[in-house]
Structures are given as C-alpha cells and as structure tokens.
Amino acid sequence: MKLCWVTITVNDMEESLNFYQNIIGLPFIQSFQAGPEVQISFLGDKETKIELICNGKKPQIGQDISLGFEVPSIDEKIQFLKEQQIALHSGPFQPNPHTKFFFILDPSGVKIQFVETI
Image 1 (tube, rainbow, N blue to C red):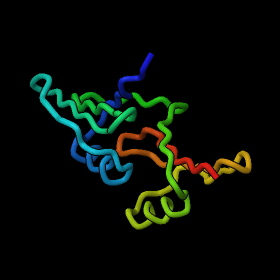
Image 2: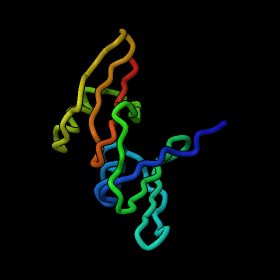
Image 3: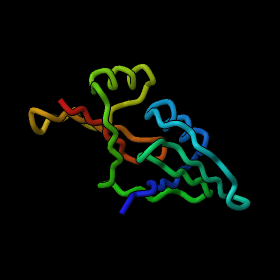
Image 4: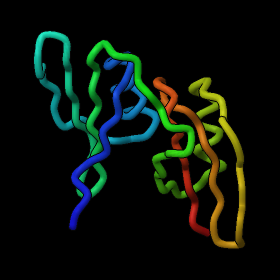
C-alpha cells in the first residue's frame, strides 16, 4: 500500500502555499477550483505530497498529529526560521545519539517536525 498524500485544511491558501514552498521546500504541483468556495492545491515530489484545501471552514487541527521532514542540519534550519521570523514551537530534542528534532507550527496550526539523523 502506498500513501498518496496528506490533506490539510487551511485558513489562507496563499499563506499556506508560501509556507510549504518557501519554508518546507516542497515544489508546487497544481492548484484548481473544486467548487465555488473550494480551492485545492498540491505540493511535493516523489513520495512526499501534500494536498491543501481552502474551503472557508475553520480547520480542526489535532494536537497530537505532526508532519515530519528530514533536514541535513537542524541548526541551519533553526537559523533559517529565525531569519523568516518563525518561532519554534518546541525543542530541539535529542532522544538518542542519532536523532535531533524540533517543531514549528504552519500558518493553520499544524505541527511541523524537522528531523536530523546524525
């Protein structure tokens, strides 16, 4: 079985597209209207794909769900996020000698985890 994508309902499509393209680094695939008040956008490549849906409804975000993205260096990513004026949600953490990670929030409140394998 293969995961197709993760769907996230967002408050603001443009703000969310900017975040997932420029902060996370996912390339834009396509965007389309799926009804009078529904816009859908896809981002990603290979096996990592995200579907953003903006439908005028307030997103219901689960506090215990996060999306994890591997980065070469969490120190460099933290510095980049500071330059973008994006605050850390929590961390960094190092639960073992081989893994470090931290969390931020996307514009709609979804927890995003950046993970470095050492």
